[in-house]
Length: 235
Image (cartoon, rainbow, N blue to C red; front, side, top):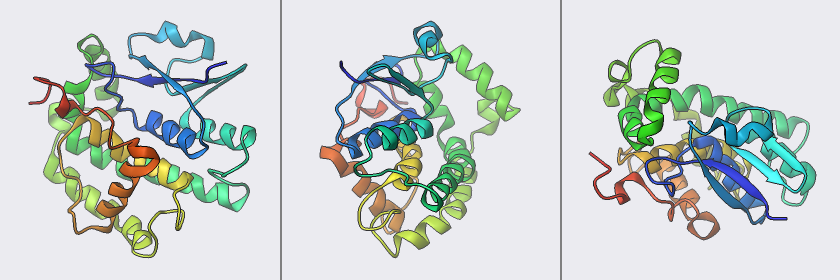
């Protein structure tokens, strides 16, 4: 049976920008597992009814249905123990730190920088839903929240511990990439796909790491469609 991953798409169904879906895609590539991605939009909740919830990523692997990027990584480690992503015990606890660090420190700074680009990358049929739900979380409009200068300053501060690690090793998990790298890099792919904003300078060790991550698995990230590749979509 074909392994399937339900993956968020934007104005073009080839535009896949969810940081959580990118986590899952890199995790599958790390395991050497083939997967067929299925484009999904926010307005297609019924398509995920079989999973018991309404968010992506959703992985269908034979009779197994798993949602949530972190749970997908845990499942892959159980079902395919070779080349662990997260490990167990203290190693898995460390991976959880990177999960929360990325979601609570990096994601808000990146969102403040690219939120209007992100909004324009979303399919027109999904924009009203996206604006209503996300502005409710933010407590203000996208236009009020959007501030690239503040976002980049916030991100620069948040990246300090990442820089420290990447001055010691090529990847967060050492000489080779692992779960910690994918948990963090998903948010860089998010920005990479929807915006042309430069999040870090090319002298930053985080930039060199991002370039290495883009090139992994035959250019999985580098070959991804960006909104800037879609004629007339980026402004």
